[in-house]
Length: 121
Image (cartoon, rainbow, N blue to C red; front, side, top):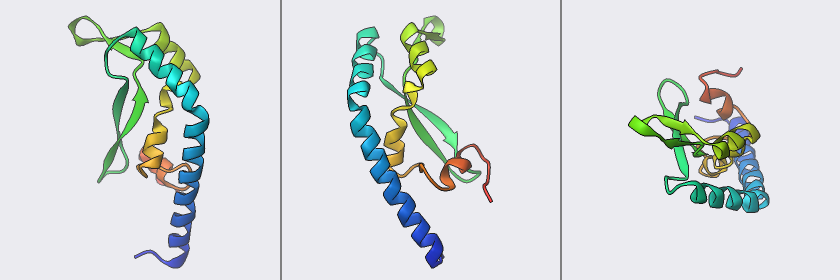
């Protein structure tokens, strides 16, 4: 059971996540649209990949990211120049805003520390 301080922290954290997540999504929408168009021009493979991440020992989640590699011969991933650019500029992580809006992860608080299995004090 949550006490009042934890409940207040959760509500403030969630409100900040929604406000900042929506603001970032609106500001980055033109850039995200350009990335989507570039990925579509590169190939017809899926635009997003879902990377499984362990939240803690009991649960896991899937983080959304832009595709940075193509399926090569024998199913091996093949890096592309566009994928290298997305990875070096960290634009491949822009779809993680969807995870924030879905409340899978949080911008503030302890949820991000738990993703890599590190417990915060």
